[in-house]
Length: 90
Image (cartoon, rainbow, N blue to C red):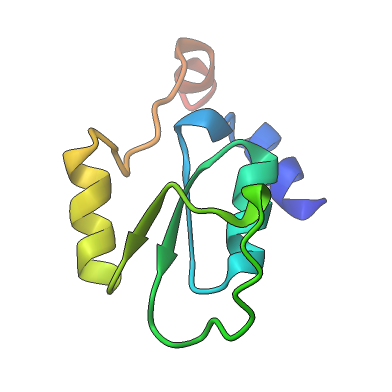
């Protein structure tokens, strides 16, 4: 799965990550990966099959509300670099 390959290569902690989607299928993927999930209500979702794995942590109206939610939750958009990785850049 390309997403898992990318998270491993970039040392991304999925438990500290956010998956934002406009469909419940997106939310289901985020839940399966262990991410925090946000459903953005922009009218794209048409199949409201709400199961436990398709229930988002948060529901927002737009991308602005999404950004505010993540920032207020203490999220960051800057990846941290380990000492080992920064040594490789020298």
